[in-house]
Image (cartoon, rainbow, N blue to C red; front, side, top):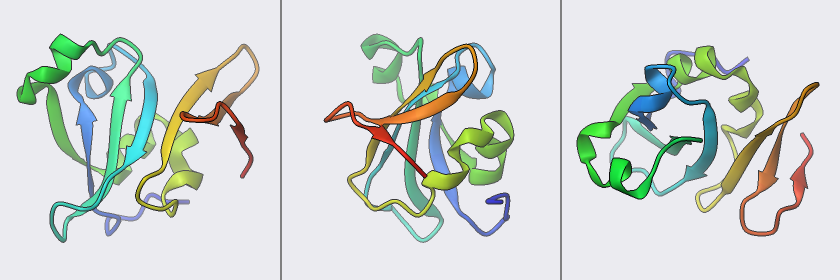
Length: 106
């Protein structure tokens, strides 16, 4: 699994880290530096106002995010430009392509 300590850091909503909201949107940008793996994670309760305050976004180790939401394991190697929505139903979690709505099968 992708719990390695050498997988770099991601930018994560404070709502996810504080367990106020679940992971909902995952997207990958070009890395800002050698430590940044490019992944960004937003919660289901994040608003534009919340996100406009940079203090609400925290650099976090990939392993920490994986511990909060193990469903992210298969997305790590997806390319820059990937935009996913993590959907939840009673029996499973699955990713959708945020632009097309297509279900992503790993």
